[in-house]
Length: 263
Image (cartoon, rainbow, N blue to C red; front, side, top):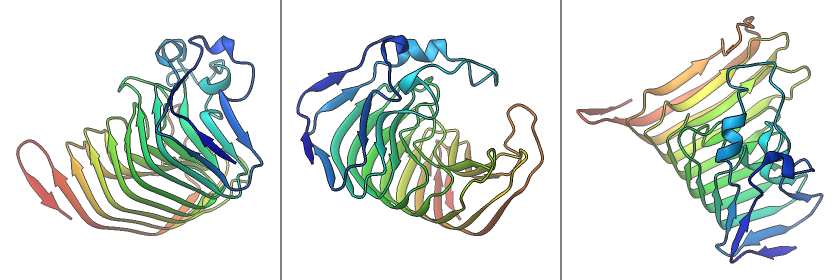
């Protein structure tokens, strides 16, 4: 299937106007290609104001693209996906949620810096994902990698605002699958809270995250360039159990307004 988008898809403003698990869904499709240079506009700013889940763990999840499990474009169990020359603006929640082998490239994803849970691309329970040559500017993670992700390659991605590139959070739920083989290379991260981050949730369940490598990354005005947080517990649920091993950081260039250095 080849979907070509040349105009602008505009989502309803209210989250209550959606009645399915995501605004746009592609499920159980082999060899899907989405191209054309058009735009998906999630119109998420009103929904962000209604979502206090960042402060309230007992909050009622907003529906559809406004919940953490859903996304602006939900690509589920796709055997092969090519997603390129696409624009995503102001998603109510995640912009692109990938489950299955995929090649997102030449994407432009933009959400305001104060937006909540607007991860640019989220990967979960997937193998052989390659993200290349894309610009992602959001209020949350540019790219987030969840449990079960294996052989993920992120190359030539420019990541602005928000929380940088994150593995996790991991370990919050029972029977999470291991994260193995994460490679982030030749990327630029700027004006973010974090650069590259591994975060594990110290809840009741353990897990494994291994073989993760970050190399040739430029960071400009980044508060926490490298962060491994095994006590990621916004609501004080602390009991670290996720095992992290075989992680490397090589040639990380740090720049700010006054000086620069590399490590």
